[in-house]
Length: 199
Length: 199
Image 1 (cartoon, helix red, strand yellow):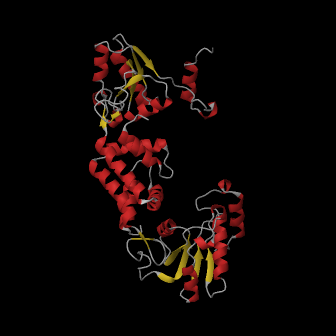
Image 2 (image 1 turned 90 degrees about the horizontal axis):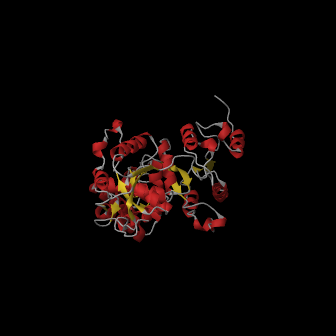
Image 3 (image 1 turned 135 degrees about the vertical axis):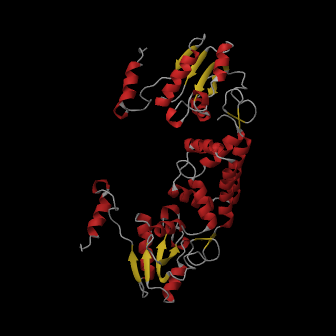
């Protein structure tokens, strides 16, 4: 450390962010010093604004400016198809694929006993309510295809299977553009298990 | 985009930083939302402070809180050994190795004709003055060992070679902990050329 207070402080604060180590923090700080003052102000303000102004949609639990997120508030979206995701950020990922026209439900995590997260920590009540009140035709479970995600998917499936709701799970397989030789055994296994007839 | 103004804005601003793409910006924004308000304020303030309070040392051109940086102001550092670096951040890298006891000189770049940077764009006058006034015994040229860095090193060498100053260049070779099989041809070539007798 060179004992330059404002520099060291900024490197320290940036280094707290996930995936940003000391060298990256140094590089970012050097870059920030070269930015013009207005851009630096914009960056800092946007960080504070983000924390202060973002809410969670009271319907789906996704990120929102107001009470309802833009997806739940959109009358063109099919409210009878609900895609269940672990975190709000998963909504961005599915939305950027650009085809899904249903709505979402954010669980707020996945069942991970080792981290002390059980079903009680997840937001499941709304799913039960939707199913009870017959407000949904299909629930697509889009938790991650890892152990905790699969456990969570199974849990949600068992929770809703006795209602009159079609339950589906997103496909697992070899990623598009991926190579068989770089895929792990389980991925290959699932890709073969879930093979489909060609048209 | 989900059209959540404060979120999109923050992702956009973070995404302008070097090495931070859209996915990383998303991840950082999600993390910032989960931080407590005080930490977010600290982060944003440190960014603004950095821009507003950092100066360049009037001696060496490195980063500083005041007129002189902590290295130039340190009476224990050997002012007669000057290490020439391209950018202020290179000082951090050399300092963190923890052994160098001389002072620095920041060129502010390297000769790169393709980017329109010639010797006139570099801070060379102080080196000439130091040599002229016989204020320096050794100049260590620590520009990067790439084409532009080597060109710059040669230029500085030619500029000062007629003065009574010992000129040295940092060693190039196989990095410590590196493997020969992962080193490129030029590195191997230099490592053999610059071989030293074993003790």
